[in-house]
Image (tube, rainbow over the protein chains, first blue to last red):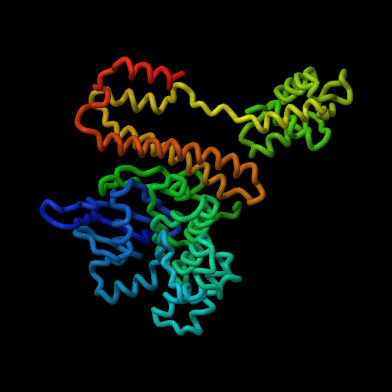
Amino acid sequence: MTAMLELRQVSKVYGSGPAEVQALRKVDLSVDGGELVAVMGPSGSGKSTLLTIAGSLEEPTSGEVLVGGSALSGMARNQQARLRRRAIGYVFQDFNLLAGLTAAENVALPLELDGVSAKAARPVGLAALEELGLADRAARYPDELSGGERQRVAIARAVVGDRHLLLADEPTGALDSVNGEAVMRLLRAACKRGVAGVVVTHDAQLASWADRVVFLRDGRVVDQTARPPGAESLLTPGPSR
Amino acid sequence: MSVRHALLALLSEGPKYGLRLRQEFEARTGEVWPLNVGQVYTTLQRLERDGLVESDDPEGEGPHKGFRITPAGGRELAQWLRTPPETVPPPRDELVIKVLVALSVPGVDVHELIQVHRRHLVELMQHYTYLKAEASEHEVGLALVVDAELFRLEAVVRWLDATDVRLTSLPTASPSAAPVGPLRRRRRLEVGR
């Protein structure tokens, strides 16, 4: 199994002198394709920093981040931007959908930003929506959708095209537990198709959907769960499944 | 878990044989509570003795003896469904005791101890979530039982999280070093009752 995401000895320091904050301290983390990993920790433990660094939205102070085997530090800015557009999908707690675009346009947007024509991007976006059971919502605007539907659109946008790394920050935070579960089922299904997923959360129920839970405290990885029975077979579907 | 009332509930749908009652009980509780045959028949005998069910052949025995609910059984079931369950926590929760004891044991890192239990609980939750994720959407009984267990375990994890933060923000004095006055002692007795 190839590591789709690898953090090697990653540290992040904000500010300096007495105002210095050490957000991450020599974090090692490796996530395989097909694996869903939850990063759990209290507020201020460094969870969100870890996610933004993994998604190349922020640079580490030291250490190295590899996505799909390529080190981000060795890439030019425009290469990093292309990687973000093509390979990495982001899901945020507040959905981050553009209010002036329909569900289908929101989902197709990353493809269009990457140079795909609107005509070619549209069917790909619609297919992603259909996969998440939202085909009949394609023409709706975000404010015409429920919270659960908005988050499903955000997930469709995050997995559209050929993304192989999915990063989610408290993706069910604003949803009730049943809608939250639906979102986690979708993230899990995306990972079963080969995507590497990282979810950061303080919520144990949310984390329990992951194949592996990594515990963060004061910017350090302090512990992780063993792989639960059955999870292995999820990654390599056999004839019995 | 009241097997007695669960059997009354199954009989409220119509007369059934003992063997079928056992199968339906297990299926509807997500097969989380296996029952042995003896338990089913003993319970049915008691229900019959109390006039809450009646059988087609009071002298008969075996898996094909049929039972039906009586009007008194129907009233008992309706009352049981609306009676709040026992929600007072057990006076001694083992995990709470362990954390409290750890505070006064020299050389024990309470945060590390909390993490050991947190990891164990989250692993348990992963097992339950896996069961739910793999189950068919028609297995409602299983989903409800698993949800109940997940919410219960989540509450324990949240207690550990809160304890972790509370102990981190404590002033230097150890909580176990706090004097035990008459008021504290009295409060403890009230909680422990």
